[in-house]
Length: 120
Image 1: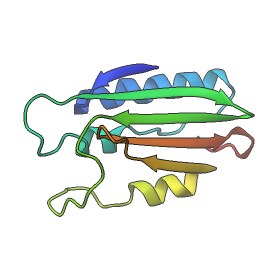
Image 2 (image 1 turned 90 degrees about the horizontal axis):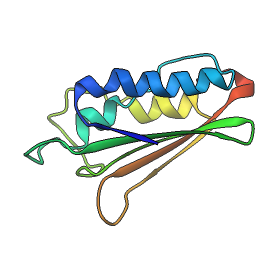
Image 3 (image 1 turned 90 degrees about the vertical axis):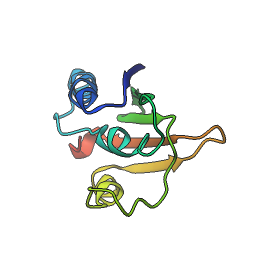
Image 4 (image 1 turned 30 degrees about the vertical axis):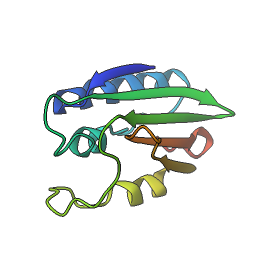
């Protein structure tokens, strides 16, 4: 597990860490994004952004990737510059995924990739 500040400059090293780990397991590299957490987690909270944490682990012939933040949680953001395609895209490229909002706040996105399907 590693953590980075939830700023745009953290996306590339977090993505690289996930891809490097996945490659060591034999997966084909693809874009694993921390982008939504960086763009949305601390939006409107004021002050310095908090952490975004990435956990990547082998799990039963697949790969489990968890992105967590301590931000404002998932809520409608009409002023967002995003297209709203993040979760639908994740649903298409993962074997399964789950979104949770812990009582303390923030968002946890857990994704499972099936390495047999070649998706990652």
